[in-house]
Length: 142
Length: 227
Image 1 (cartoon, chains in turn purple, blue):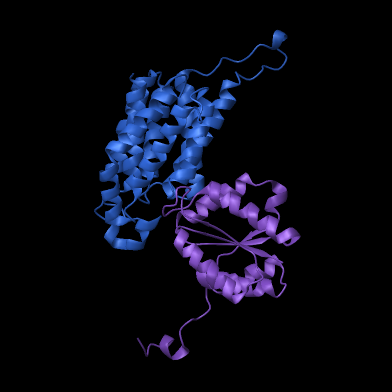
Image 2 (cartoon, rainbow over the protein chains, first blue to last red; image 1 turned 45 degrees about the horizontal axis):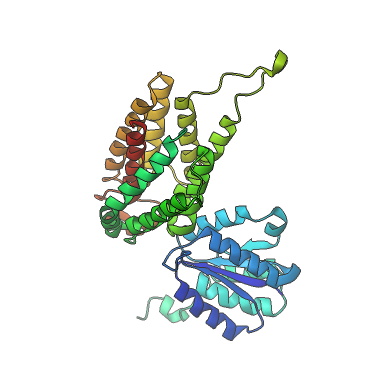
């Protein structure tokens, strides 16, 4: 089964997100890399690299889908990916999806046995998936 | 970036970052997330700890730069750690390549080698490699209100001074002056990269914290080179 790796700035945010994901799809393995190596807000390439490896180990040959939050997360992830072996990188895909919605959506997809590309596509789709009722979007409410 | 210069620069940079921690953080609070000085100081403190503990080599310079980059990447936490850290690592990689000696001249009996690049040339090459790495990782260009607005003029000034035959201390002083002018020139710019870009027009009128820390680091290099 495809595993998820969640990358973000806040350890607390990622702990909570892991709980949400676990509720939606208990069977899916989730590795997180949140905060700096000393536990503050921020991202850390070595921490991300370790989470990628943990996710790969948990996923067997099915690989991992990575979701991330803002700013430096992408740069730190880029450095972490460069530190993986080429053979490891082949089992990693990264989603453009929003971290919270994308992770929950990806977990449900992974639990259903989807490939990592299908899981990524589902998480990516959350970028544009409406979360407000259509009549709100029409300019009526809130 | 040779011999003892790298270690002297890294230690001086750490001291300057610590001294300017509040100013850098205040600059970032105005247009970012208010942690630039705190983040950099945390990374440079860790670097000092590693240098003192022997966990980051002090020589050869190429390995010192690589170890310093590793320390910043692991502990700074913000984009600046990834960018500066990657820059230092690439500078180290270029020094390692140059320190491998000049290239073997094909067909020259006895494996004669081309002249080893001068201290000045090696420093300029390492600096340029750092700026190239930061540009690539950040997908940024000068004019976007980032550290590149200080670093690119500094790289150009350093390269020009070295090409004109200036000694290292003079060339680095020229780079520092260019970095400081470049940083000040970010004040009227509209930020289009990083967290400051969220502010749109409100980013205008503020000195970019990344450009400010870059100017500080290049000034530390100049002071280290001046002995």
